[in-house]
Image 1 (cartoon, rainbow over the protein chains, first blue to last red):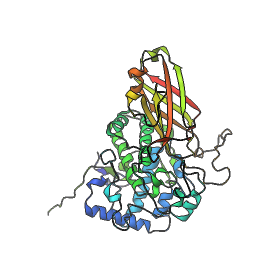
Image 2 (cartoon, each protein chain N blue to C red):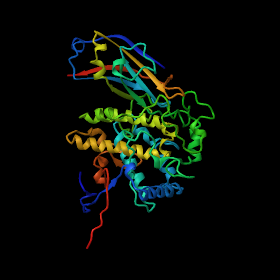
Image 3 (cartoon, rainbow over the protein chains, first blue to last red):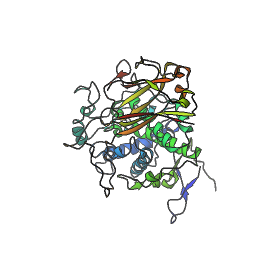
Amino acid sequence: MSPTGAPSPQQPAVPLRHRPSVTEMTEAELAELRAAFKALQEIDDERGYQYQAGIHGLPLPFYCDQAHGQPAFLPWHRAYLYRFELALRATGHDVMLPWWDWITVRSIPAPYGAVGEANPLYSVPINALALEQGKRGEGAPGDTEETRLAGKPNTVREPGRPGTRLPTAPQIERVMAYTEFASFTTSLEDYHGNVHMWVGGHMGDIPFAAYDPIFWAHHTMIDRLWRMWQLRHPQASFPENVASEVMEPFNLTAKDVLDPTTLGYDYVTTSTAIAVEG
Amino acid sequence: MDHYQARDLELSPSTIAREFTRADLVFYGVDHRGPSFEALVFLNAPEATPDTPLDVADGFAGSFVIFGHGGCYGDVGHCEVPSAPRDPFDSRPPHGLTPQTKMVEITEAFKHPRCSGETLTVTVLPVVAGADGAKQADVLFFTGLRLLTYR
């Protein structure tokens, strides 16, 4: 992997930032992440959490319709994470999005649980317009007025409901072994859907999924798997017709996001700052 | 539908001889307007239920997941996918609810001894989470299915 990224020919290479595993973060790093999410959730305009989460689903329009069941699934979500991460960092907190490795961590990671009274990584209020529009939907089979997600003002989860399952290591290894992009993205997207359904609650529903903070850790894991696949199969081509597709509303083409180092980040397992004397 | 089954599909000679390195089932025109669900695919297991073990030995071949739209949230016509031919100067993305194509690789299950005959039965069970386990739901709609093999 490259230690630096070159944003453009006009700018010098700069040190890359690294997205961490949530299970490898220190308490200080987790505190900074919580502070960033809390600050973003307190901003009530297009820089804030509600706007960012709403891009995926409600309020209308559903920008992610371009991304699900389509070849743009991976680049669209990479652009989405990139913009969300910039919004997080704009709060003044030096954070990067962590990934939840659901292959080895078979439960909701502890930092995203109910820690204390108001953990900003646990549950988030959903804005009134999204809820109002959500009431026009049909809900899940067997839903009642009480169980409908659109009737719940804060995000909820139902992890591990019977009939749902997390992808296993052999399943993901088979996905990573595909040598062409179409099979890789199609299969990975299906397993991504398994995780949404396993978390349940708002995460299992496109209109509200991105309001749950675990959404970002899940999709960072998906983005990481894509990055690992790109490194494992450097000869694999990306569909030309998709490369020029604009990822709305991010004003980035798929080609713009193929290499995460041009966006200033990469993935590592651990990253430890070591003091330099002198 | 809450259950799909194609019984006793005739296979081509090379497929009967299992002269392939990979086999896929491709579902065309899959509707994703409704709730999220998983479609479990079984081969030569016509009696499969949501409780059937998800093992190749029991006929399980794979699955696909629809991360569903959850219904229509717009005004009248908002969720109607245009059926008219597309204007050649229309550079907008396709309608968001344009049906999807889903691929399930079935190589391992198709080469299993339980699939060694000259015909194949494909069973698809769409399931959602329930209080006691996966339960079938009337959420699966698609317009075409094709078995593809590759040497």
